[in-house]
Length: 407
Ligand SMILES: Cc1ncc(COP(=O)(O)O)c(C=O)c1O
Image (cartoon, rainbow, N blue to C red; front, side, top):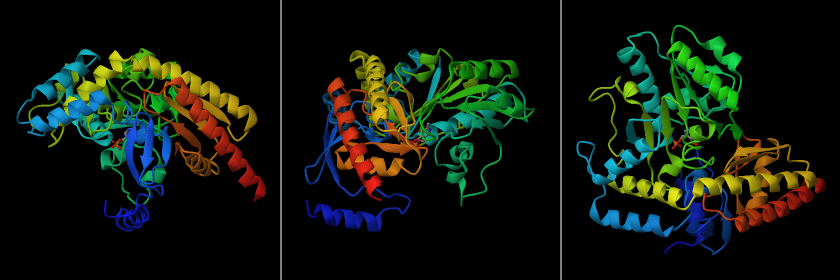
């Protein structure tokens, strides 16, 4: 290592995209649910790369597959098949409602494919040429590429980058009447996160998703679930839709799918994919053997180690503990979530400062929607980790309260 931690922070701040403002430390390695910076400081990680590192750090099975695959074959092209890619697609299809998968590199890209599938389905399968509009929801987040960004119904992400693409209309989350009001002659699909993540960790109500399914059936619209954050065991079932018992027509995944390697996926039925023909869509890196091999192993570990059940149990414990803390710290206004996608609402003026205080106590959390502390730890956390998190958060809240009182 040629640079000190301070030098790296200075160079990083000078050379990094100004759209990022990383925390002032240099992360060096991880083990289990803990991260270590260059100076050796330990952090309990309840960010997990923003709901990505499902198996935590240095998981022996993940590392083994990564090593072995890297020595055999990294990348070919979607002009060719590899066993790793085929076995991943088969694993996803056999565990879901879907018949086919488009593999890509990120959540935004998975949503882009979903949007293109919806328009192609209306035109090429149903013959409805004018149906291109997608209904999305206030406080949604679907990614930063123009299609996904246009679908994201949060003006703060659009500001300075307008015009957004046409063809997206906004309804209110958990409000079926508002959806009925915007369904019209141009509607093609409804795109929704079963649990809104970036918007503030807000689970959909059961009746809401059931109602969306019924509306889609009634009007021949596609129901697209963006499970980029909520999928892959995080909410207590492999796919969040399974926990609700409401099947979408298109399912978009990323984040936890690779447990740290960049991969996304758009799953749908044959009928939906009938809208695409050769050349309709493609991506260079999507589903290369390296990421496919890792993702296949992540699914195996999630299942064999009971990580969906663990997410449910640990999530309940975490929510209970946060509710207990709320009794002593009235800054916590609400605690909500599903599985290990948990939020504690503390207000926009407090959330960032509390997250910093938590970091000072060696606990990594981040904020969602500006007003909510978000807890999305690796799915492998144990009871002792939850207790550790709550103890560190309690100390952080105590310190934050002292600072606030002395202002
Ligand atoms: C629900 C949801 N969809 C899409 C995205 C975008 O994913 P990516 O950053 O991989 O493009 C995110 C990222 O936070 C997300 O939470």
